[in-house]
Amino acid sequence: MSTKDKILKQLADNPIILYMKGVPSAPECGFSAKAAKILNQTQIPYAYVDVLKAPFIRDKLPSVSKWPTFPQLFVKGELIGGADIVEAMNADGSLLALLQAAAKPSAAAAPTIAHSEVEALIAGAFPQAEIHIEGQGCDLGITVISGHFAGLTLVKQHQGVMEALNEPLTSGRLHAVTLKTYTPEQWQARPAAANAGLLQIQI
Image (tube, rainbow, N blue to C red; front, side, top):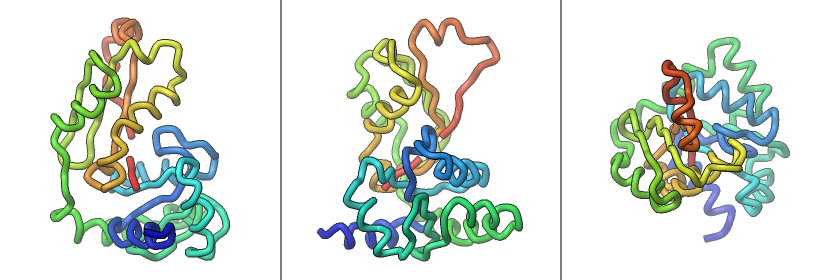
């Protein structure tokens, strides 16, 4: 499959998809952070592709979309625009309506992933980790406590977990992930009121 064909398949398979730098829980540019934050606030599941980890897509997408920069938001296969357009549409209320209309048809038929599979994937990458999963379907809150996180930045911790979940994120079975990571020491020392955090996905 050519890179262009892969992009077209992603657009066909995912009614809402954001091509961004980084992941929603750890954006790697301010514009991607702005777009992802707005989308997250709508609480509507969406797919995403980290173009920094997909250089062929990063190089090819501008010629397909006729849009030179990132992020790029597509709804039902149509380019909506970058961060500034997403922000403007959010401000005038048109973005939410557009996303709701796009998400409804696929919501009932969207494939889902079992908690046990998510736990197994994470445990495979982080043996002996303590894993807590909340939520249903493809929108999950995940907390991971692992000694493997010691010495790693929060971004590296999240990237490691997201990498473990690459298949369901890529396939669309997992869309929205609210992620919290702790070392065992951080978990024990957290304030009593602290609880799970936020942020998906996927290609």
